[in-house]
Image (cartoon, rainbow, N blue to C red):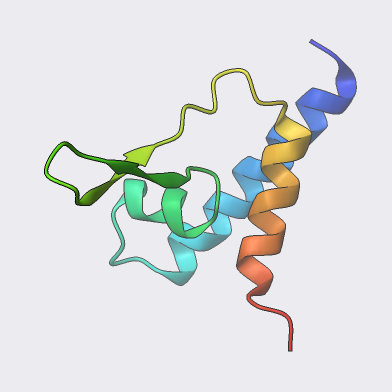
Length: 78
């Protein structure tokens, strides 16, 4: 593991820790989705409807996850 990856992991943990304090009523999974750490994409079903499918972040670098989380928490640009 590189020092940069470890630093990014620590920043992600700090971010999540702050969210736990800020939103005590949210479940952990909700915090992961609302922070942008976990993402959904629509998947078409056989009946023609779309259902959300969780994207697997297993091979994603921590830096990319961190950037997405920071962007998600800033909200939409004015």
